[in-house]
Image (cartoon, rainbow, N blue to C red; front, side, top):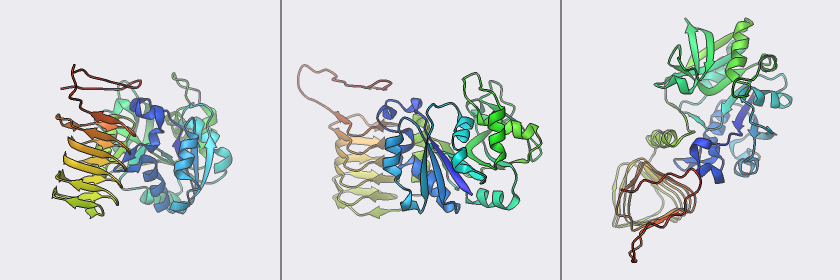
Length: 353
């Protein structure tokens, strides 16, 4: 069995962060989202992995390398244009060959992993197996309609969903998916939709089964979603204090990396702080992840993600529900005349109390 991980999307919902980095590499609890998928594949006993890459190919390849650190053999598969998930499947056909495979969207996190699903697929050998989860906003996803245990109908982002069962970004297929992907027509958005390909399998009488996710799952493609994923991952954080702590008040589970120092601060976990960070006179609230090399002085941060090299100094208002990119500087100036000085990239969002 092989794996196909899709990492070619542009991440428009996470701009401006994704103007300078691949959306699959935005960190959750200080780990790139893509790494959660690679770990899930490894835990499922799969070793051969193809990664679909697009404009951010060089960045993905630099981060993942050969896959050796996970015990994987990684092959990079360029998709010249983002023409849909079924198009990505066809692009990967030379790599997949006759092997059954799992397709995993690189910006998704499935808490329980995919080992149970992969074992069931190997054992039962259906033509396809899809993961489903109940969601409050099914119109934003591919939606499945079931008749008993049988998948009867799939529809991509329907205006009037027939159920609240969304397709999770993990699919299992055998070789018949290539037949299906070649048979379908592009959708209104000019993409070959994987939902249409699976519907073809259903209509042709192939064995398509579903597996409902009982634990949490997140598509991390938006700010709210990635912050929620960060919260959920941090729920399982274990205390690990490798840095220095001077006159601090720690509550709950806190992880502080090597070379970091926290002085005169209150830290309420779960919080993860990377390596070589400096915190002084700060309040760090729950569900915050601070990347390597960050510097925070005289500020308050809660329910946020700060990427490596971020700096926050002398900010009186609490920063919360925020995502700061690499090497971002947020500081207060006492000089006169007092004015806001901003340098914001495209699609930035700024809220000033």
